[in-house]
Length: 87
Image 1 (cartoon, rainbow, N blue to C red):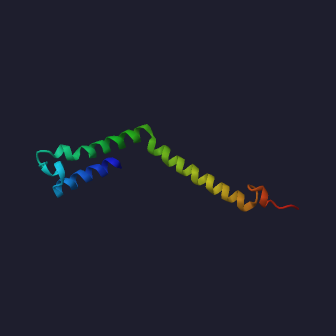
Image 2: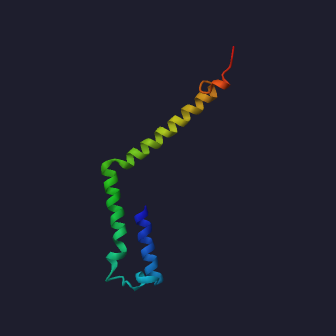
Image 3: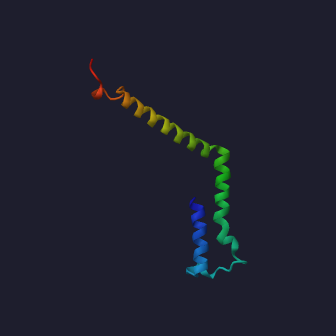
């Protein structure tokens, strides 16, 4: 996501004519402005091939599952010994 933001920033700086980025000409120096988008695509291919995206989603699902389990245990009074009923 950082690469996409950097690419958009470079294009906006070029269009606004700010700093040395404003001196870049679009047809001639397009590679300087578009390299972050290529890096973003390469990163997405790498993270998908290694399994980072799937691992992150599995971690999110596990966290939701654990949170739901803890909430259910507290509701039943099994998790917190202070709230435990005495017969």
